[in-house]
Amino acid sequence: MTEVSLTELARELLTHAREARSGRGATTVHGGHDRSLRQTVMALRQGEHMHEHEHPGEVTLHVLHGQVRLVAGPDSWDGLPGDLLVVPERRHRVEAVRDCAFLFTTAR
Image (cartoon, rainbow, N blue to C red; front, side, top):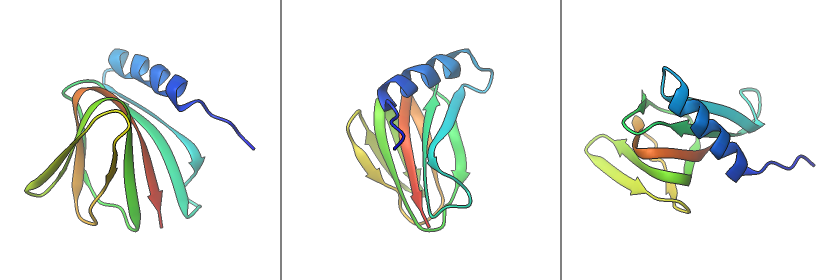
Protein backbone atom coordinates (compact mmCIF):
# COMPACT_ATOMS: atom_id res chain seq x y z
CA MET A 1 0.00 0.00 0.00
CA THR A 2 1.19 3.49 -0.81
CA GLU A 3 0.47 6.22 1.72
CA VAL A 4 0.22 9.85 0.66
CA SER A 5 -0.32 12.88 2.89
CA LEU A 6 -2.75 14.99 0.89
CA THR A 7 -2.23 17.85 3.34
CA GLU A 8 1.54 17.89 2.79
CA LEU A 9 1.20 17.42 -0.96
CA ALA A 10 -1.31 20.27 -1.16
CA ARG A 11 1.13 22.50 0.75
CA GLU A 12 3.98 21.63 -1.64
CA LEU A 13 1.86 22.16 -4.76
CA LEU A 14 0.57 25.50 -3.45
CA THR A 15 4.16 26.67 -2.95
CA HIS A 16 4.93 25.60 -6.53
CA ALA A 17 1.76 27.26 -7.91
CA ARG A 18 2.54 30.55 -6.18
CA GLU A 19 5.99 30.61 -7.79
CA ALA A 20 5.12 29.13 -11.19
CA ARG A 21 4.50 31.31 -14.19
CA SER A 22 1.33 29.30 -14.92
CA GLY A 23 0.03 29.73 -11.37
CA ARG A 24 -0.64 26.01 -10.99
CA GLY A 25 0.80 22.72 -9.90
CA ALA A 26 -0.48 19.14 -10.08
CA THR A 27 0.53 15.55 -9.53
CA THR A 28 -1.34 12.27 -9.93
CA VAL A 29 -1.47 10.32 -6.68
CA HIS A 30 -3.33 7.24 -7.91
CA GLY A 31 -4.15 5.64 -11.25
CA GLY A 32 -3.52 7.27 -14.57
CA HIS A 33 -4.70 7.50 -18.19
CA ASP A 34 -4.61 3.72 -18.55
CA ARG A 35 -6.69 3.05 -15.39
CA SER A 36 -10.40 3.43 -14.71
CA LEU A 37 -9.75 5.55 -11.58
CA ARG A 38 -7.45 8.56 -11.51
CA GLN A 39 -6.83 10.91 -8.58
CA THR A 40 -4.84 14.09 -9.00
CA VAL A 41 -4.02 16.80 -6.48
CA MET A 42 -4.08 20.22 -8.13
CA ALA A 43 -3.21 23.65 -6.80
CA LEU A 44 -4.11 27.02 -8.31
CA ARG A 45 -2.98 30.48 -7.35
CA GLN A 46 -5.82 32.95 -6.66
CA GLY A 47 -7.30 34.23 -9.92
CA GLU A 48 -6.08 31.28 -12.01
CA HIS A 49 -8.36 28.65 -13.52
CA MET A 50 -8.43 25.37 -15.37
CA HIS A 51 -9.73 25.93 -18.88
CA GLU A 52 -13.17 24.63 -19.69
CA HIS A 53 -13.13 20.91 -20.45
CA GLU A 54 -15.14 17.75 -19.95
CA HIS A 55 -14.40 14.24 -18.74
CA PRO A 56 -16.08 10.98 -19.62
CA GLY A 57 -17.46 9.19 -16.56
CA GLU A 58 -17.85 10.35 -13.00
CA VAL A 59 -15.79 13.22 -11.54
CA THR A 60 -15.54 14.72 -8.05
CA LEU A 61 -13.55 17.59 -6.62
CA HIS A 62 -12.60 17.47 -2.91
CA VAL A 63 -11.36 20.84 -1.64
CA LEU A 64 -8.24 20.51 0.51
CA HIS A 65 -7.29 24.19 0.93
CA GLY A 66 -8.61 27.63 0.01
CA GLN A 67 -11.71 28.34 -2.05
CA VAL A 68 -12.67 27.07 -5.49
CA ARG A 69 -15.56 27.78 -7.84
CA LEU A 70 -16.81 25.06 -10.15
CA VAL A 71 -18.56 26.52 -13.21
CA ALA A 72 -20.65 24.51 -15.68
CA GLY A 73 -22.53 26.70 -18.14
CA PRO A 74 -24.81 29.08 -16.22
CA ASP A 75 -24.40 27.11 -12.96
CA SER A 76 -21.65 27.53 -10.36
CA TRP A 77 -20.78 26.12 -6.94
CA ASP A 78 -18.24 27.38 -4.41
CA GLY A 79 -16.22 24.93 -2.35
CA LEU A 80 -14.27 25.32 0.88
CA PRO A 81 -11.93 22.87 2.66
CA GLY A 82 -13.72 19.59 3.31
CA ASP A 83 -16.36 20.14 0.61
CA LEU A 84 -16.89 17.49 -2.05
CA LEU A 85 -18.31 18.82 -5.31
CA VAL A 86 -19.77 16.39 -7.85
CA VAL A 87 -18.83 17.66 -11.30
CA PRO A 88 -21.76 17.66 -13.74
CA GLU A 89 -21.39 15.59 -16.91
CA ARG A 90 -20.92 18.60 -19.18
CA ARG A 91 -18.23 21.15 -19.96
CA HIS A 92 -16.90 22.81 -16.82
CA ARG A 93 -14.00 24.81 -15.42
CA VAL A 94 -12.48 25.30 -11.98
CA GLU A 95 -11.53 28.78 -10.74
CA ALA A 96 -9.38 29.71 -7.74
CA VAL A 97 -11.36 32.25 -5.70
CA ARG A 98 -8.42 32.09 -3.25
CA ASP A 99 -5.19 30.09 -3.46
CA CYS A 100 -6.51 26.53 -3.43
CA ALA A 101 -5.68 22.85 -3.63
CA PHE A 102 -8.09 20.04 -4.37
CA LEU A 103 -8.24 16.32 -5.10
CA PHE A 104 -9.71 15.75 -8.56
CA THR A 105 -11.05 12.19 -8.96
CA THR A 106 -12.19 10.72 -12.27
CA ALA A 107 -13.70 7.29 -12.85
CA ARG A 108 -14.34 5.97 -16.35
